[in-house]
Image (cartoon, rainbow, N blue to C red; front, side, top):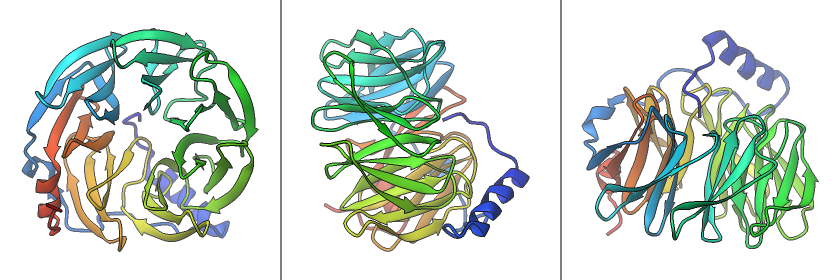
Length: 335
């Protein structure tokens, strides 16, 4: 989730190319709701982690965040809002992480790229596997028996044995596919170099479908038989019906560019981008409810009644009350 942004001409070129290709309509640029200042969301806690802070994973008893300066992952105790462990790594945590099999799985950039496994019970680095991620801003997913990681720019999706780190299967995806997400027995992979989402049967590795999205889909989340993609090309959000296998809506957010993240929680879809650290969309209607601007942003997760939001440049993570953010968007939080 680099904080660098593509310039306006590049944004327009990507969006225009998508339109000419007959793909999802490009979103409008600029504010989609009246902007609010991020300062109105007063954090319950802000924790400094390193030179930069990026990639967040929430588990039932912890919040994990990656950093540079040092290259590490950090464990936060959500009961006390305290940093309780730092696990140093041999490379930069440069892509989305996931928690599964009593471990935190961390793709590392370097020469060569590798995949780190951190024991979440003992807070120690338990193994480093080869190969690693295809590129920065990729991701990783876990199904019932495997870890899934794209290995190269040609779209080789690896099924990895979580015990040995051995690659058990290679699935060929469209080139430029980088970010997997597991939901409903399927592995869903966005194609950042195109405008599509590919589904793979997690049991067999069979490629099942290709669904059009907005341009440059990168980060994704899911739940309630829906997948949501954050499209870097035009700063839009696409909602996919996983039962019907088609996109049902593409929503303008006005936040194009590299970086960002997306999460689902409290009946809302939350996105973050540098300088637009938080946007909120109603998951049922697809209506953009709130958008906060200002310093910070770039990665987030929802859990323990909170939005956990990084400030990439400051190297911090802040805990924001989820119900407070919902209320400011005119939504009554569930009791």
